[in-house]
Image (tube, rainbow, N blue to C red):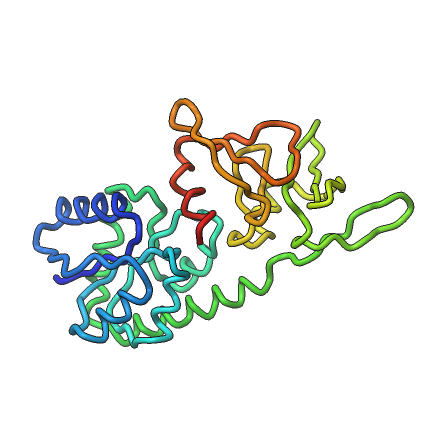
Length: 253
């Protein structure tokens, strides 16, 4: 079996390659591609592999843009660091995905599943197209506004005006770029589903932050990272060691 890996994180690509070869030494990795442009060029100049491992978020954009440029007919195993990113679409359409960091059991399941699909590549192409369409539709459903109380009125708060959201004494509050605070009738878990993950990131149990509000990141002890925003926050925003790679990638997408 011949496969390609599309992954812009060098260490993640090396780890995935090592796991693949550990599970099945007969799988030949033809190339490790790091961007949309590089992937498009490779697919245009090479014969179709038997399988592709494809990260959803690349440094130069969404890997789904590759499908707009070339006709990929091989089975695809998607990988993602975003556990809130359209995973229902993958499950409904029977396209497999691996949540980063990839573990051996999940990889083995995915490889076995795709070995069973190799005999019917046309069906797999149709499923991939359904997934892409589902994700595009889901993106359009993210919240653009919230109705929030202000004195004796309900006003429209645009998500584009929100710098961060946090919990304080079990109350969820949104803070705007003008430092105004609004109460929201949603939990942080609910907001994680309703806000576009391209624009907002769940930093920890207390904070959801907007990309536009991020000023810089500070290396913290224990492998953690502190996020500094352009507006004042009631507490320091600390990202766990497990999510450091995820937020570093998110802030530069």
